[in-house]
Length: 574
Image 1 (cartoon, one colour):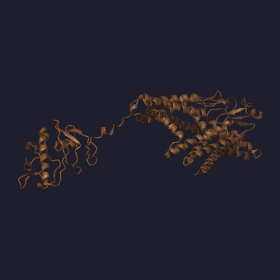
Image 2 (cartoon, helix red, strand yellow):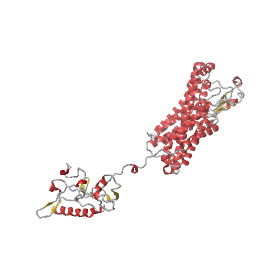
Image 3 (cartoon, helix red, strand yellow):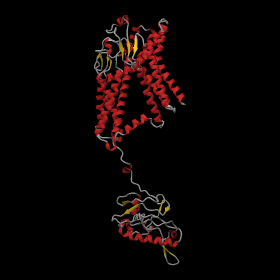
Image 4 (cartoon, helix red, strand yellow):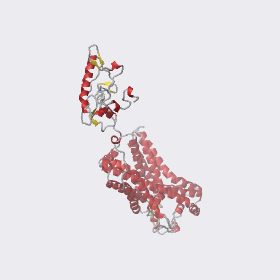
């Protein structure tokens, strides 16, 4: 896709994102305009209401001014003054962020990602400004600069992050901003980088546990308070379409309800108006708006309410325990209880900051008078969450010994003899391992005890060097690696016989230094005399192949001391 096509594609994605968000609020209001009001009210009023709802959903402050009759009908003090709504219906922001991330992943597949990203972000900002300007009236006035900035941020940040993550997964080089971040991370010393990694992973893991528990709690409360919720729907007299509009608004506040439930689980709870308190210890409520979903709020005291604090504590302990092996492996030689404890403190700090941020996003003003204070306290929630997550994480990471780690391969596997051929690595020096018959119980030790320490053939090839040196109990060297075995040639018989004689003399010189128990077995080579009277030990004289491990030395052990399989055949019956 070329550059103009990429820009057009990104612009269309941005238009769809804004249209979906505004449409979610506009469709039920338009049905209300057509069915309940019979098209008697100008549709522009419903457009402005939908635009204001979309802006509030992104955290934009909107100021409402009620006329005298409406302000008196509310029965709230301060209703006749301008009312500033600062609480965010985060459902709209979540939809914008999700569509932005989706657009970013698509743009990552194009060659002009930067152009597409800029085009999409600019279009969202322009459309947000248009929505804000179109909703300005005597009754409602949004903050213009917030209207441009906040929806754009909710779209731009997920778009850029998702695009870069998608590119990195495809193996592409990082962009300059990502490269700068990676360079900064690389400058952190290795042990502290591992500690930071575990702290971030663990803290976000604890937050995930809290979000899951809070969502389950909200679902259980709504299902358990179904009768109260239906009663409030009936008392609203909104009708079918009006009830649909109210339900859409409640769904937009669903992320806020989850944030309030998180604050309840952590302990501080939340408020629905000044002087109210909803916490595990008890619930104190004054007059509250007649929103049906608020009928699910817990009432009265809770005998086991404080057990809810076990959720972040147990979650932090389990998350830290699961991350401990990862931290131990990453620290390697720098693994100390102090560094692991610092990682546990980091888990608590990250969990506290993330939970406090969620509390801040879900708090604000919902109306005049006492409704200016709605939601949890970010400082109290964040501090208590950091304490409840940090202490168990420190205990899980720093206390106790680490799991048994397997030692290195060479230290627990049985030692095995290894051979190397000169032709394979002619230029490399041959290392020498000194093994005694007392220490070696393997194949090489058996060779030494049989007196066959030197070899002429390795793997069917002649001329190879022995890699091992075998010494006896007296320390005498039987075969030296720097003295290679002579290759046996099938050429001139005189050369073969001369080599055999030389080998026999070497064995005879070394044999007296070995204890009697290590004497080699009799050779299967038969001595023959040629026509010239010379002795020959050629294996062909006895009709067999040459035994490469024969030493041509006869045992000096008495026959009655030999095992039955070593005795002559005539002694078998004795």
